[in-house]
Length: 505
Image (cartoon, rainbow, N blue to C red; front, side, top):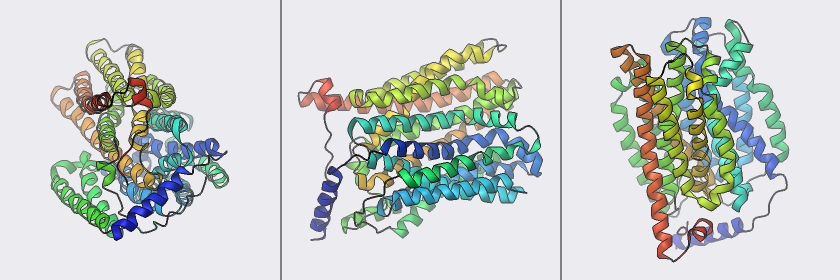
């Protein structure tokens, strides 16, 4: 009887989702969420270029100052799935605006911090607020858009993710150059305040409220289990530079055990007809979700760590300033921005094939740049690598946006927040692995050879290996779809545009 009631409830919710009426303010509302999302993702990388000046100004140790970056990434990842579920159960608009207000206040607190302890505390709170905002972005896109418009909206969202991740060193270097002096690092945080206040005011006017579905239950024990599991995986990674991987490796085993208990609990809740924190059927019945999450996680392992390695190479190996180092990788950000917007218009036509093309482009572009920086003279390194990085950027623009669209487009709107949160948790875990492993490998090679070119080449090859695994997974999904559609006698154009029916959720 419970299962029957749950099924009828699902059908009623599905009927509500089918009764879609486009909000005339949806495109303006989208830009509010994208601006807020850009700020939160940019703050993952923008602070890295300012760490030397923060350390000198506040008299902090290397381990303390590292928490300014790693603490933000840690609390960001911890909040994502829980925040997405709360948005689904309550009101995405309200949670987004509250989190944005907290993010702005924490940005001001970071800028005004008189010592390293208060700065780290403010960054932890800022990361938590960013984690509560992030899943509402993708969920609001699911709620406000349908069909081809959803693909375009996710195109802009993908461009935001790609540009914010790649442009952190550029923006950080520019702010430090303009705000000259030891206190210049504070403007990296202060710049969020006026932008965030404007986004709050516009968001109150433009963002739609979530339709109540009667699913207000939140699995609190599940929240604790998931949080402990993610924490166990993330903590050794964010402590990697201070020997965390060698001292805390056992936490990976703890994390795996805790997450296994979490999954078992979610299945039991589902069997009893209770709404779980993260519905296991997302991974088993929603076409493309499990593979899309895997593609994104593997891609971010290589993608996120690459920019730290480039910064180390240019600043320590070639003695560039933070701004010059950021400008050296600008061609990738430019190519990624343009391609991501275009890819949102093409994803309905080409589907997973876009991701395959994109990953191939990234691998070719970054691989060519790695070879040039290993064997070519370095007098004009940025000019030599600019065309290759631009090609890689175009490829990157065809990865993030189409993958998000393909992964989330068949997810029911009532589960959009939790699904988006889980997807971004995978990306954050991948980014944590990449930002710990690639610079670690760079320093390891450097300690043996004292050759910056060899160290860079080795680290980039490791990043390309992760991206190649992501490409293999995407190609498998594309080929599987082709075989499945061929069995039903559809031509490629019909394949790309035909609706996909997942089993009932």
